[in-house]
Image 1 (tube, rainbow, N blue to C red):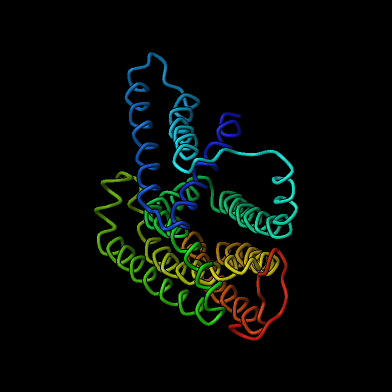
Image 2 (cartoon, rainbow, N blue to C red):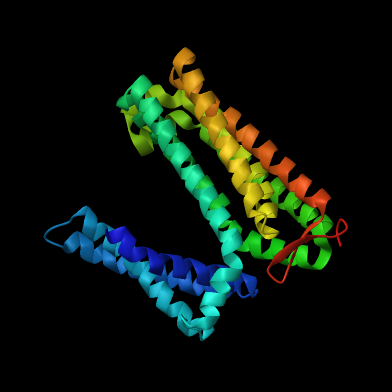
Length: 310
Protein backbone atom coordinates (compact mmCIF):
# COMPACT_ATOMS: atom_id res chain seq x y z
CA UNK A 1 0.00 0.00 0.00
CA UNK A 2 2.79 2.41 0.91
CA UNK A 3 4.69 1.64 -2.28
CA UNK A 4 1.52 2.27 -4.27
CA UNK A 5 1.10 5.68 -2.64
CA UNK A 6 4.74 6.57 -3.30
CA UNK A 7 4.93 5.27 -6.86
CA UNK A 8 3.62 8.41 -8.63
CA UNK A 9 6.31 10.52 -6.97
CA UNK A 10 9.04 7.96 -7.68
CA UNK A 11 8.04 7.75 -11.34
CA UNK A 12 7.93 11.55 -11.66
CA UNK A 13 11.37 11.88 -10.06
CA UNK A 14 12.65 9.30 -12.55
CA UNK A 15 11.09 11.30 -15.39
CA UNK A 16 12.99 14.46 -14.45
CA UNK A 17 16.24 12.52 -14.72
CA UNK A 18 15.42 11.35 -18.25
CA UNK A 19 14.28 14.86 -19.17
CA UNK A 20 17.54 16.38 -17.91
CA UNK A 21 19.66 14.04 -20.00
CA UNK A 22 17.39 14.48 -23.00
CA UNK A 23 17.98 18.24 -22.77
CA UNK A 24 21.73 17.64 -22.33
CA UNK A 25 21.63 19.16 -18.85
CA UNK A 26 23.05 16.32 -16.81
CA UNK A 27 23.86 18.64 -13.94
CA UNK A 28 20.14 19.04 -13.28
CA UNK A 29 19.82 15.27 -12.87
CA UNK A 30 22.78 15.28 -10.48
CA UNK A 31 21.22 18.04 -8.37
CA UNK A 32 17.87 16.26 -8.32
CA UNK A 33 19.35 12.87 -7.41
CA UNK A 34 21.63 14.50 -4.85
CA UNK A 35 18.65 16.17 -3.20
CA UNK A 36 16.81 12.85 -3.21
CA UNK A 37 19.77 11.14 -1.54
CA UNK A 38 20.19 13.92 1.02
CA UNK A 39 16.55 13.69 2.09
CA UNK A 40 16.90 9.94 2.39
CA UNK A 41 20.02 10.30 4.56
CA UNK A 42 18.25 12.72 6.88
CA UNK A 43 15.29 10.39 7.01
CA UNK A 44 17.60 7.46 7.72
CA UNK A 45 19.12 9.34 10.64
CA UNK A 46 15.67 10.01 12.06
CA UNK A 47 14.66 6.41 11.35
CA UNK A 48 17.41 5.01 13.58
CA UNK A 49 16.50 7.44 16.34
CA UNK A 50 12.83 6.45 16.22
CA UNK A 51 11.43 4.41 19.08
CA UNK A 52 9.73 1.99 16.72
CA UNK A 53 11.45 1.02 13.45
CA UNK A 54 9.13 -0.81 11.07
CA UNK A 55 9.44 -1.84 7.42
CA UNK A 56 6.63 0.59 6.60
CA UNK A 57 8.58 3.47 8.13
CA UNK A 58 11.72 2.42 6.27
CA UNK A 59 9.78 2.42 2.99
CA UNK A 60 8.47 5.89 3.80
CA UNK A 61 12.00 7.17 4.42
CA UNK A 62 13.10 5.81 1.06
CA UNK A 63 10.08 7.31 -0.70
CA UNK A 64 10.57 10.71 0.92
CA UNK A 65 13.59 11.23 -1.32
CA UNK A 66 11.49 10.51 -4.38
CA UNK A 67 8.84 13.00 -3.24
CA UNK A 68 11.49 15.70 -2.75
CA UNK A 69 12.99 14.99 -6.18
CA UNK A 70 9.56 15.02 -7.83
CA UNK A 71 8.72 18.52 -6.59
CA UNK A 72 12.25 19.83 -7.14
CA UNK A 73 12.02 18.80 -10.79
CA UNK A 74 8.94 20.97 -11.22
CA UNK A 75 10.97 23.93 -10.01
CA UNK A 76 14.00 23.03 -12.13
CA UNK A 77 12.05 22.73 -15.37
CA UNK A 78 9.33 25.28 -14.59
CA UNK A 79 6.72 22.62 -15.28
CA UNK A 80 3.93 20.95 -13.41
CA UNK A 81 1.74 17.93 -14.25
CA UNK A 82 -1.26 18.75 -16.39
CA UNK A 83 -4.53 16.85 -16.55
CA UNK A 84 -6.18 18.85 -19.32
CA UNK A 85 -7.05 18.11 -22.94
CA UNK A 86 -3.39 18.12 -23.96
CA UNK A 87 -2.71 15.29 -21.53
CA UNK A 88 -5.58 13.22 -22.89
CA UNK A 89 -4.33 13.74 -26.44
CA UNK A 90 -0.81 12.75 -25.41
CA UNK A 91 -2.03 9.58 -23.68
CA UNK A 92 -3.94 8.57 -26.79
CA UNK A 93 -0.92 9.24 -28.98
CA UNK A 94 1.60 7.25 -26.96
CA UNK A 95 -0.80 4.61 -25.63
CA UNK A 96 -0.25 2.51 -28.73
CA UNK A 97 3.35 1.86 -27.71
CA UNK A 98 2.99 2.32 -23.98
CA UNK A 99 0.74 -0.71 -23.62
CA UNK A 100 3.33 -2.91 -25.34
CA UNK A 101 6.22 -1.63 -23.24
CA UNK A 102 4.14 -2.12 -20.12
CA UNK A 103 3.25 -5.62 -21.26
CA UNK A 104 6.96 -6.37 -21.83
CA UNK A 105 7.84 -5.29 -18.30
CA UNK A 106 4.98 -7.32 -16.89
CA UNK A 107 6.03 -10.47 -18.73
CA UNK A 108 9.63 -10.06 -17.57
CA UNK A 109 8.61 -9.63 -13.92
CA UNK A 110 6.13 -12.51 -14.04
CA UNK A 111 8.70 -14.88 -15.54
CA UNK A 112 11.16 -14.12 -12.75
CA UNK A 113 8.48 -14.84 -10.15
CA UNK A 114 7.59 -18.13 -11.81
CA UNK A 115 11.25 -19.13 -11.84
CA UNK A 116 11.55 -18.34 -8.13
CA UNK A 117 8.52 -20.50 -7.38
CA UNK A 118 9.93 -23.37 -9.46
CA UNK A 119 13.30 -23.22 -7.71
CA UNK A 120 11.69 -23.15 -4.27
CA UNK A 121 9.34 -26.01 -5.13
CA UNK A 122 12.02 -28.21 -6.72
CA UNK A 123 15.13 -27.44 -4.64
CA UNK A 124 13.70 -25.92 -1.48
CA UNK A 125 13.50 -22.43 -0.01
CA UNK A 126 17.11 -22.60 1.23
CA UNK A 127 18.34 -23.15 -2.33
CA UNK A 128 16.26 -20.22 -3.55
CA UNK A 129 17.74 -18.08 -0.79
CA UNK A 130 21.26 -19.07 -1.82
CA UNK A 131 20.58 -18.28 -5.46
CA UNK A 132 19.03 -14.92 -4.62
CA UNK A 133 21.89 -14.09 -2.28
CA UNK A 134 24.51 -14.66 -4.97
CA UNK A 135 22.38 -12.72 -7.46
CA UNK A 136 22.35 -9.81 -5.01
CA UNK A 137 26.14 -9.58 -5.38
CA UNK A 138 25.58 -8.85 -9.07
CA UNK A 139 22.99 -6.22 -8.21
CA UNK A 140 25.34 -3.18 -8.24
CA UNK A 141 26.46 -3.94 -11.81
CA UNK A 142 22.87 -4.51 -12.92
CA UNK A 143 21.98 -1.14 -11.39
CA UNK A 144 24.69 0.51 -13.47
CA UNK A 145 23.36 -1.19 -16.61
CA UNK A 146 19.78 -0.15 -15.85
CA UNK A 147 20.65 3.45 -14.97
CA UNK A 148 22.68 3.73 -18.17
CA UNK A 149 19.37 3.97 -20.02
CA UNK A 150 18.88 7.41 -18.51
CA UNK A 151 21.70 8.61 -20.73
CA UNK A 152 21.61 6.07 -23.54
CA UNK A 153 17.91 6.15 -24.48
CA UNK A 154 17.65 9.92 -25.12
CA UNK A 155 20.96 9.79 -26.99
CA UNK A 156 19.78 6.82 -29.05
CA UNK A 157 16.53 8.60 -29.93
CA UNK A 158 18.45 11.66 -31.11
CA UNK A 159 20.80 9.45 -33.11
CA UNK A 160 17.87 7.75 -34.79
CA UNK A 161 16.18 11.04 -35.56
CA UNK A 162 19.30 12.47 -37.20
CA UNK A 163 20.97 9.44 -38.83
CA UNK A 164 18.28 6.77 -39.08
CA UNK A 165 18.90 3.10 -38.40
CA UNK A 166 22.53 3.19 -39.50
CA UNK A 167 23.43 5.78 -36.90
CA UNK A 168 21.33 4.08 -34.25
CA UNK A 169 22.92 0.68 -34.90
CA UNK A 170 26.39 2.20 -34.64
CA UNK A 171 25.42 3.85 -31.35
CA UNK A 172 24.04 0.56 -30.01
CA UNK A 173 27.25 -1.29 -30.84
CA UNK A 174 29.39 1.30 -29.08
CA UNK A 175 27.13 1.38 -26.06
CA UNK A 176 26.89 -2.43 -25.89
CA UNK A 177 30.66 -2.83 -26.13
CA UNK A 178 31.31 -0.30 -23.37
CA UNK A 179 28.69 -1.87 -21.15
CA UNK A 180 30.05 -5.39 -21.80
CA UNK A 181 33.54 -4.27 -20.78
CA UNK A 182 32.29 -2.69 -17.55
CA UNK A 183 30.11 -5.66 -16.63
CA UNK A 184 32.88 -8.08 -17.61
CA UNK A 185 35.37 -6.38 -15.30
CA UNK A 186 32.88 -6.46 -12.45
CA UNK A 187 32.03 -10.11 -13.11
CA UNK A 188 35.72 -11.04 -13.30
CA UNK A 189 36.48 -9.35 -9.99
CA UNK A 190 33.48 -11.05 -8.41
CA UNK A 191 34.53 -14.46 -9.68
CA UNK A 192 38.18 -14.10 -8.64
CA UNK A 193 37.39 -12.90 -5.11
CA UNK A 194 33.98 -14.48 -4.65
CA UNK A 195 34.96 -16.43 -1.54
CA UNK A 196 36.09 -13.30 0.30
CA UNK A 197 33.20 -11.22 -0.98
CA UNK A 198 30.59 -13.79 0.03
CA UNK A 199 32.11 -14.15 3.49
CA UNK A 200 32.23 -10.39 4.08
CA UNK A 201 28.95 -9.34 2.44
CA UNK A 202 26.67 -12.33 2.93
CA UNK A 203 28.32 -14.26 5.71
CA UNK A 204 30.03 -17.68 5.87
CA UNK A 205 26.74 -19.60 5.68
CA UNK A 206 26.52 -18.68 1.97
CA UNK A 207 30.00 -19.93 1.04
CA UNK A 208 28.60 -23.26 -0.26
CA UNK A 209 26.80 -21.28 -2.98
CA UNK A 210 30.01 -19.80 -4.38
CA UNK A 211 29.90 -22.19 -7.34
CA UNK A 212 26.96 -20.19 -8.70
CA UNK A 213 29.07 -17.08 -9.26
CA UNK A 214 30.62 -18.11 -12.61
CA UNK A 215 27.42 -18.76 -14.62
CA UNK A 216 25.68 -15.77 -13.06
CA UNK A 217 28.66 -13.50 -13.81
CA UNK A 218 28.67 -14.67 -17.43
CA UNK A 219 24.94 -14.03 -17.62
CA UNK A 220 25.61 -10.53 -16.33
CA UNK A 221 27.94 -9.84 -19.25
CA UNK A 222 25.32 -11.07 -21.70
CA UNK A 223 22.88 -8.46 -20.44
CA UNK A 224 25.00 -5.90 -22.31
CA UNK A 225 23.69 -7.39 -25.55
CA UNK A 226 20.12 -7.39 -24.27
CA UNK A 227 20.39 -3.79 -23.09
CA UNK A 228 21.89 -2.47 -26.31
CA UNK A 229 19.46 -4.41 -28.51
CA UNK A 230 16.45 -3.39 -26.45
CA UNK A 231 17.68 0.18 -26.57
CA UNK A 232 17.21 0.20 -30.33
CA UNK A 233 13.68 -1.22 -30.16
CA UNK A 234 12.67 1.37 -27.59
CA UNK A 235 14.27 4.21 -29.53
CA UNK A 236 12.14 3.41 -32.59
CA UNK A 237 9.08 2.69 -30.42
CA UNK A 238 8.88 -0.91 -31.62
CA UNK A 239 6.89 -1.93 -28.56
CA UNK A 240 5.06 -4.84 -30.17
CA UNK A 241 8.32 -6.39 -31.36
CA UNK A 242 9.90 -5.96 -27.93
CA UNK A 243 6.87 -7.59 -26.30
CA UNK A 244 7.17 -10.55 -28.68
CA UNK A 245 10.83 -11.01 -27.77
CA UNK A 246 10.14 -10.79 -24.03
CA UNK A 247 7.33 -13.33 -24.29
CA UNK A 248 9.48 -15.86 -26.19
CA UNK A 249 12.44 -15.28 -23.87
CA UNK A 250 10.23 -15.79 -20.81
CA UNK A 251 8.98 -19.12 -22.14
CA UNK A 252 12.55 -20.22 -22.87
CA UNK A 253 13.65 -19.00 -19.44
CA UNK A 254 11.03 -20.98 -17.54
CA UNK A 255 11.44 -24.15 -19.62
CA UNK A 256 15.25 -24.10 -19.59
CA UNK A 257 15.71 -23.36 -15.91
CA UNK A 258 13.03 -25.85 -14.85
CA UNK A 259 14.58 -28.62 -16.98
CA UNK A 260 18.18 -28.04 -15.92
CA UNK A 261 17.13 -27.62 -12.29
CA UNK A 262 15.39 -30.97 -12.36
CA UNK A 263 18.37 -32.85 -13.80
CA UNK A 264 21.35 -30.96 -12.38
CA UNK A 265 20.10 -29.14 -9.31
CA UNK A 266 20.79 -25.54 -8.41
CA UNK A 267 23.87 -25.26 -10.61
CA UNK A 268 21.67 -26.30 -13.53
CA UNK A 269 19.34 -23.40 -12.75
CA UNK A 270 22.31 -21.01 -12.72
CA UNK A 271 23.50 -22.23 -16.13
CA UNK A 272 19.90 -21.99 -17.30
CA UNK A 273 19.98 -18.29 -16.43
CA UNK A 274 23.07 -17.92 -18.61
CA UNK A 275 21.48 -19.81 -21.51
CA UNK A 276 18.40 -17.62 -21.23
CA UNK A 277 20.56 -14.48 -21.24
CA UNK A 278 22.28 -15.64 -24.42
CA UNK A 279 18.93 -16.37 -26.04
CA UNK A 280 17.45 -13.04 -24.98
CA UNK A 281 20.45 -11.06 -26.23
CA UNK A 282 20.39 -12.85 -29.57
CA UNK A 283 16.63 -12.56 -29.98
CA UNK A 284 16.41 -8.87 -29.16
CA UNK A 285 19.22 -8.01 -31.59
CA UNK A 286 17.67 -10.19 -34.29
CA UNK A 287 14.35 -8.45 -33.82
CA UNK A 288 15.99 -5.03 -33.99
CA UNK A 289 17.75 -5.94 -37.24
CA UNK A 290 14.42 -7.11 -38.67
CA UNK A 291 12.93 -3.75 -37.73
CA UNK A 292 15.91 -1.92 -39.21
CA UNK A 293 15.69 -3.82 -42.48
CA UNK A 294 12.00 -2.96 -42.75
CA UNK A 295 12.91 0.71 -42.34
CA UNK A 296 10.47 1.26 -39.47
CA UNK A 297 10.36 4.96 -38.73
CA UNK A 298 8.75 7.04 -36.05
CA UNK A 299 7.03 10.12 -37.45
CA UNK A 300 4.55 12.28 -35.53
CA UNK A 301 3.14 9.42 -33.51
CA UNK A 302 2.80 6.97 -36.42
CA UNK A 303 4.92 4.16 -37.82
CA UNK A 304 5.59 3.68 -41.51
CA UNK A 305 8.24 2.15 -43.72
CA UNK A 306 11.01 4.21 -45.28
CA UNK A 307 14.31 3.25 -46.92
CA UNK A 308 17.00 1.97 -44.59
CA UNK A 309 18.57 4.84 -42.73
CA UNK A 310 16.14 7.31 -44.34
